[in-house]
Image 1 (cartoon, rainbow, N blue to C red):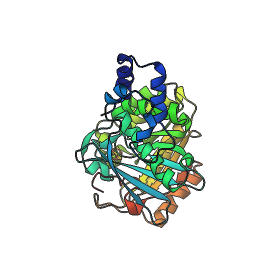
Image 2 (cartoon, rainbow, N blue to C red):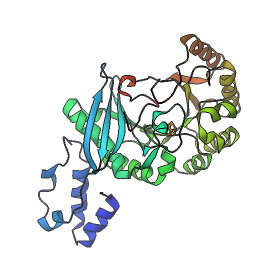
Image 3 (spheres, helix red, strand yellow):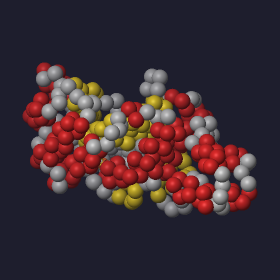
Image 4 (tube, protein in one colour):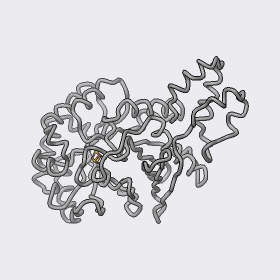
Length: 341
Ligand code: SF4
């Protein structure tokens, strides 16, 4: 399995001149990627150097699924020889694309509304495997459109990014340095680990943060997010306010709306009260109608209930957006990623 740090050391040990590493980076982080491996790319290298290289890509197979309206696609990626599949989603907007990346294969946090959580945890992904998700879309877009339409990256796929933080950070830095993806165009979405949110807040890094809130009370949150049994909402909001002590940037609160579970006006009013006591101008609620899937027995809220919740947010002048639910039919919508899809 390729590790870029080890590879750089390997070239040094081989006595390769420094420009060979630069050549390698040009190859590895090519925008023109049309397929793996790109065998011609390193043809100027001496044979001895090429012979000693480890396998340069972990991906052994990619399957692409496209939605009928062509507004989203899902890539199912096989890593190595064994039965380990990751997933990443491309969301196509009017004049740009957003890529949703996975940080783990499966997820240990077991959120009840999430197909990934219901499928259990397999392992963390390496930074290189995360980069390969991005590159899977370069291959796709180079064959189907323009790869330079990629504008945003969101870590909202399989896994909890803060539980694989060192590899996620490393992947972000490589994607930033080599593909020029701006930190401000990258979002980490967490189930809400207060210590990790504080650690993230201490970084001088303009990467965006989104927190899966999904409830106004501990009792409701505990029903749908087991992590809420470890960290209560006071701890979570304390970490949110710590973040605002360090950054004057927008922070996103994700709220999946599940019928008769967390979609009452009373529950949303508790969220509103917390927001009013925090930085209301910097907090932005992403309202996400639940995407039904076979791994959970929940239903979407009725249109009437969604209107009631919207009226509350409007009355209280809370910033909110209805999140587009792209990719439902291909199992690529929020909470639907599953290794078995
Ligand atoms: S919602 Fe996120 S944190 Fe929760 S189980 Fe799914 S992938 Fe894990």
